Amino acid sequence: MSMFDYSDEKPDYFVGDSRDKASGAAPDAGSTLDFGDGDDSGGSHGYPDEAPRRRRGRARRVVAWIIAVCVVVLVALCYFRYFNPYATESRIDGYVVNVERRGLLFKTYEAEIISESALTDTTRVYSRTLTVSIPSATLAHRLQAMQGSGRRVSLVTERFYGMLPWRGASTTVVTGIAD
Image (cartoon, rainbow, N blue to C red):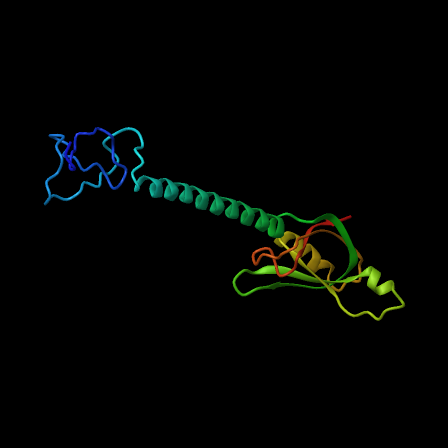
């Protein structure tokens, strides 16, 4: 048996199969090594380039899941902050001071109301009016008719954690007038 006997049939796990694929003979001294792309056989032969491919695919899946979870959390946070009211069917009793259409890009109706509880409180000095947003024009026109008349009005409102420019400049939105 010579020192350079290439007759064993065991696969080498170094870089790739260095045998000539057509003849099965060993390469001559001047040839280059075949690094194999792993597509020749159906199974994994432990070539060093297959493990990074598996890790890279697994890392992509993990990154895709992390991005998907972040998007779902972001959508849920936006929904609860801007679109889901935390107080519904609340009532404000008071007097309409001013109703006007405001806004640079989105024109919305805003009303200033003096709360009846603020007027009847004798321990504190009256300090401010309550600003509410009115989403519909018909509701705004009904409140404008009551403006300055001295008639008490009871408003049904919803409160949100955040305001949206097309909904108004206030987190309190009037949904109706209680009779």
